[in-house]
Image 1 (cartoon, rainbow, N blue to C red):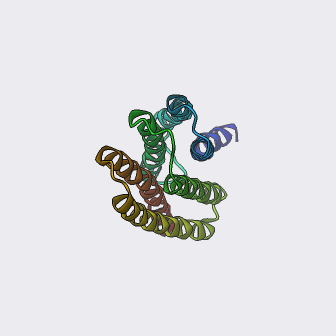
Image 2 (cartoon, rainbow, N blue to C red):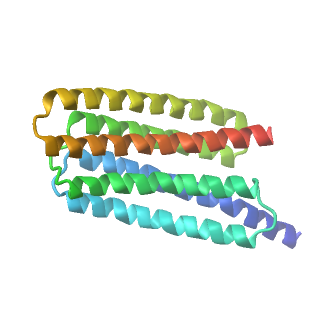
Length: 209
């Protein structure tokens, strides 16, 4: 009985880590969106996100270490690893976006950047919902949220097209145009990474239904 308890705890640790990981991602997206609406110091903004990203790296390391030590896992080992890596990608991209404001000396984010940030935050919220259902083993419930993530990624695609169209028609400074164009693309890539997570979750549903 005691060995069964230990085995259960070792299996459950992956779900516990996934909850920590997605809450950390949600925190990063929330800080990103809030700070972008009142950006005062781009470097401090990036450092705030870096602090959250460092915690994410620690969680990723601990998951991989646990995976190497665990014989029986609650999901396929490849699914755990893929999900871990793709979740970490989201944090890495959010951090890269934050640093781009400092690198490009952008002190006044435009409305498109704020819309991208809100879209990213909404994507991460859907990931939190989906992972909670994964932990609860309510696999059919996950689909509603993966579909929502796909919808939000499509919104980001539209935002990218609209933002670039506006930029090319209104910006007369070629350097400023290049900088803002790069940031738009980087922010859209965050939603692509969220969609990657949604695709992995849908694969998990298929293999475990």
